[in-house]
Image (cartoon, rainbow, N blue to C red):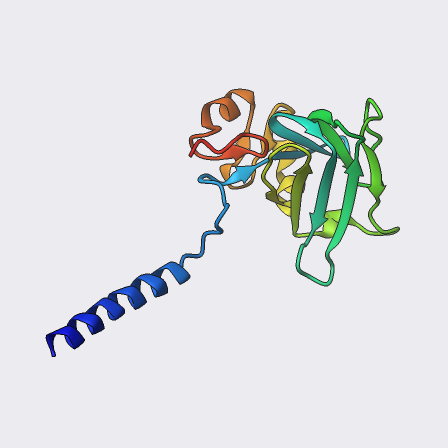
Length: 184
């Protein structure tokens, strides 16, 4: 009889551990800190700042309003071994891509004709090539607040508007730039 109670207790404990583990909502390979990239709009151009250099970039992807019927994607590609990316002009407010300054990243998949990215709610950003994390930013906030901040400040998602000294101080403490290895 004691063996049955003991085995029931063990089974109950194992069931509780399994149920607790199943309820963990953090993805298995999620970074220990929230990843972010910086965005702002200057002179009608959506600008990217990765916060720290990304080496060996073979692709960049922007997905507007992911998971909705309005979702649309724009992709850039570069030949292997990839190119360094830290700052880049992405899109014009009036529509269309901006050309890459040195020509190494090319638009592989443009936004659909007539698509107005300024009406999107969210922008998801990802980097291909190096080990990197994706980032998400509120498009309306970028459009509304960019003019209120110096051209050296970019919106890094939930971390807010940051300049180079802010990013250097907070990277690996309160967030990770998209190409910063996870410290844990």
